[in-house]
Length: 310
Ligand SMILES: *[C@@H]1O[C@H](CO)[C@@H](O)[C@H](O)[C@H]1NC(C)=O
Image (cartoon, rainbow, N blue to C red; front, top):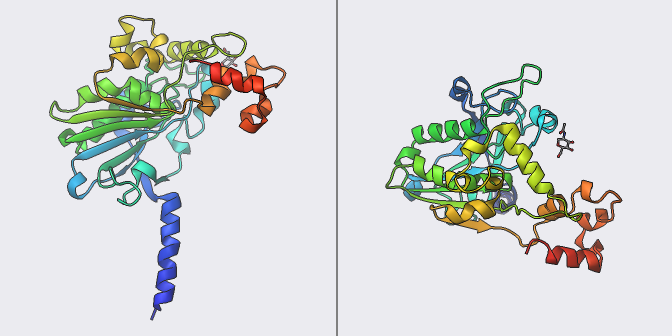
C-alpha cells in the first residue's frame, strides 16, 4: 500500500513538473497539404500540435503561431532549410503546452478547455510566401501563405468550422503572423464566429539602426521579394503602400477590422539587438555587452534606447 505521505510527495512533484513544463502534445503532419504545394522550405508537410477542447470550451478555438525570425534571401533560407524552422522532418514530435496552451484552469483560466493548437513555423516568411517555381539547385519552397491556408482549412475540417469563439495568437514572427493574417482568419470562419487576434512580441517597428541605415526595412524588403509575399499581405495596406511597408504592423494594424490585442515590451530586447543595434551597425562591438546585459549599458546607450523609435 502506498502511504499518504508518499502520495502527497508525489502530488507535489507532479505539480512542480506540470507547473514548469505543461504537458506534452503530439505533432500532426498536414500530409494532404503537400499535393497543394503547401510545404515547408524543404518541401516537407506543414505541422501543428492539437489538444482537443472539452466541456464548455468544446466549440472555442485558440490557434497559436510559433515564431522564429525570417529568412530574407536564398543564403539565409538555405541555412534554415534543414532545421526545425525549415523542415517538419527536423521538428520534435511532442511539445509542451504551457501558458495559454495549458489544459488546467489553475494555469490557464481563460482558455484551458478550448481547442488549443500550436502551429509550427517552417516557411521563414511569417506565413506570407507563395512562389510557384522551385529552383532544383536549392529545392527551396517559398510557400508560407499556402501553408497558412492548408493548416486553417485542415482545422476547419477538424471542427473549427463550428467555432463560437476563435482567437488567433502568436509570438514574435508568429505574433506578426497573427497581425498580418488577422482579417483573413476572420474571413475564413463562419459569419457567426466571434474572432479576435493577439500578437505577443510581434510589433516590429520600422526604425533606423544606430548608423541611420534602414536595416529592418531592407530585411523585410528582401523577405517580401524572396518569398513573393506581396499578394498575401493585407489588401487594406497594399492598396495604399508598397508591399514591404505592409510587413510592418504600424502600417497594417490601423486598417485591421477584427479586434486585435497587441502585447509588446516598450524596450523589446530582440528589437534592440536586431533592429536598433544589429551586428552590421556595430562593427567594433561597442554594444556587445550592453546587448547581453542591460546593466552593462552606458548612459549614452540607455539614452539611445530610450529615445529610439518613439
Ligand atoms: C542575405 O541576408 C543576410 C542577412 O541580411 C546578409 O548578411 C547576406 O549578405 C545576404 N546574402 C545575399 C546573397 O544577398
